[in-house]
Image (cartoon, rainbow, N blue to C red):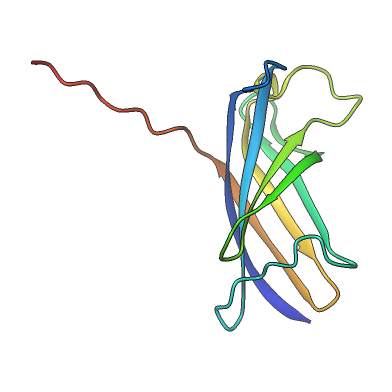
Amino acid sequence: MERLDVSGSFLIRDNPHGEGPETLVVVSAVKNDGDPWIDWTGSGVSVRLSIVLSGRYGPLEITLRIVRHTPQSDGFAVFTVELPSGVSGPMPYIQPATMAIVIDAPSFRGQGLACACGPAVPTVGEG
């Protein structure tokens, strides 16, 4: 089985559809030879995203529900995720700080971490 180099980051933002906060996780997956891995929805492919560190609760594990997947070029993909049923409170209440990314495929496997990031906000200078 070949190894995938996996990394990512995530952002909680206002949902443009007005349904409460939206959590987006961007994931990068690269094969050993440096080529991007792009088979996100192939047969036997499993992508698991979990909260593993929370500002509110410390270490914990909550496997998230993937509600949308948006492939991008060069081995990148964006996943929209939600808390599973049975977990109370919105995502900002949990205060996720780090998520685990695990990709299992028939001939590849990789895992990595996604840390929280924020939007770039311009600094307005005086004068």
